[in-house]
Amino acid sequence: MRHLSHWLAAILLLVALPPVALAQTQAFVGAKILPVDGEPIENGALVVVDGKIEAVGPAEDISIPAPATVTELDADTVIMPGIVDTHSHIGDVSGGDRSGPIQPETRAMDSVNVLSSGMKRALSGGITSVNIMPGSGHLISGQTVYLKLREGNATTDLAYRFDDGGIAGGMKMANGTNPMRQPPFPGTRAKSAALVRAAYIKAQEYADKVDNADEGEAPSRDLGMEALAEVLSGKRMVHFHSHRHDDLMTAMRLKEEFGFRMVLHHTSEAYRVAEEIAEADVPVSLILIDSPGGKLEAKNLLARSAPALERAGADVALHTDDWVTDSRYFLRMAGMAIRAGMSREAALEALTIRGAEMLDIADRAGSLTPGKDADFVILSGDPFSVYTRVLETWVEGERRFDLDDEDDRLVAEGGFNALSDDDGNGHIHGHGGRE
Image (cartoon, helix red, strand yellow):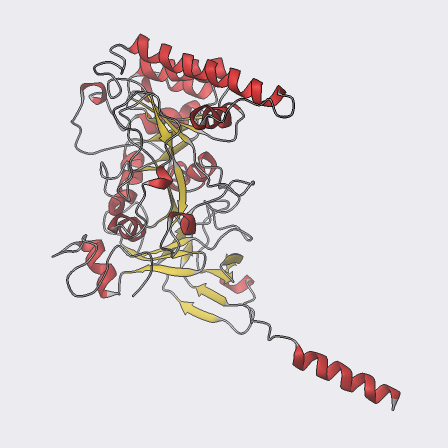
């Protein structure tokens, strides 16, 4: 009887426990897989469990746990990691105003509209993670925000996080002609650099006072200095807008002088100082365009910067600077880099893992590695062919774009009210989730 009572007690305990949710398992089988962290896999299998990558490899070598939803794909289809865009302005983002050239206290997260159609455009181009930046009309225009394009109605729903739980992002800086105008803005390149130096010296002094203050004697909180102190400590990456070769060298001198981490963005004339960039161990977020124009300092923007940086040994990512390049056509930029002489391997990395490293999110994104988030893109063919279409974009195991969906196709291809938030029929094309 004693043993029977023990069994009855165990059964009653199991009945009383809440039901355990079964793991959601999905498998994508038959496509060519470009994992980035390894060689391409013909007739591959990608297994996703609860939004994380469980396994990647040849289909014949992968055991798919049951129960699972299995999607069979043909051999012409390609699966690659979700694209990481290191520099974008989607979401109606803004930063500093006209009151001064140095405004590190402003935060992009306070201005981003995550229900903007730009988010859906990005997904239709295969982008799953993005660095949304203030503009370049200031020497320091504010804090950027790193977003994962998952479903959500607020910036906090989409934001990556620092280890301390804060909203993750970098610091946008710029030099060259964009920040040069009437006072209080600088009128020369030399004055631009001097103002930046003065700001960082002040930030050093502020950080020193905070670190060495006795209890109750810390300086009054200064949001701008606090943000620059995060740059100086290495917590926050500097994303530096720069075009001309001399401006690139100035940016690298500032990095050397103050010891902050930095990514050079745009770098129109990188091919002129590629060796110097590589020697300084500064990564580059490069933009290539097929219709040069605009400001004079970008007149020497040439696609040959891509292979020049690769040959020099620099880490290279690509970015849209959306609207400069529409997020829907981001893959074309990698094709242009290859046409100029960049290797296919480096071009694929420039869309994925290199950008993830520059945003400090490589532990979660940038390659199809078991344990990382299940962010991936299903393509109709070779990612570098102009004939290839993005068929589906998945974020953390959830399908966020589907070319077969009528609303999604409208965003991808255009048409009446395709990029408006409301098409008049109750459909919100830019919405963070499906209706």
